[in-house]
Image 1: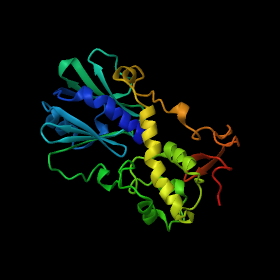
Image 2: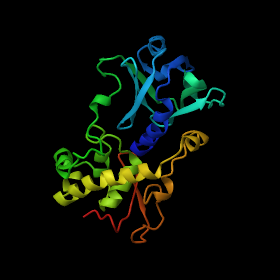
Image 3: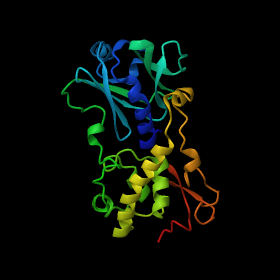
Image 4: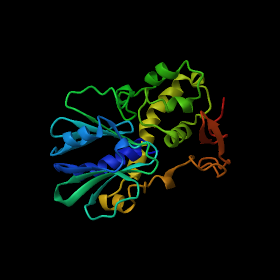
Length: 276
């Protein structure tokens, strides 16, 4: 699943390509990916509107339109957005096509069909997508150790599971929770309530540093993004622990261990990240 760094990469690549382009036609190959409103109204309202901006909130993308409406997109596991020429070969699982000016198209594809799109009218409250339930952005300068401690400091739940709670911090998933906890030298299965003040402060400092690092490393040109069909992120060589079980720890050389926390795989160094 794309996490905050990947979704931010998509936003930065696609926004300049869409800015100021009007929608000439919509094609729905899979109407069921339109979660709100009915597909017919979705198409009718969007016709003729112009893209003004593309924003990110957690793992959501928000397409803002000239009429004040907005399209919210969640890519879920395998969703992808591409801006292509009209004659560019369509991906097999392309479900929505926005035909635009200048011979371009915005395409939404999704192999597993879990991704969804919502259209909200100007001034309409979002009671549909779940975006209003999201917590603080991890890159927000207001993030502090005290904020994290206030939410999780009395929890018996594993700190790894806490980092995935989107209603507290929006955008962190399985990959970057492992990376963050390794950099913070906190074992992922430690109960959150066992952390002390300095560890909360360390987490609050490392979270934005880690995510910002991977945003920079994911940087792609529009040409590179299109050539890779939106799937070639540059983070893999820089991951220190995620997916590296059995390999040497980059800090101490100890073999990295894998465990399962909340049904998700998690990798850590038993030497650098002690249970305490």
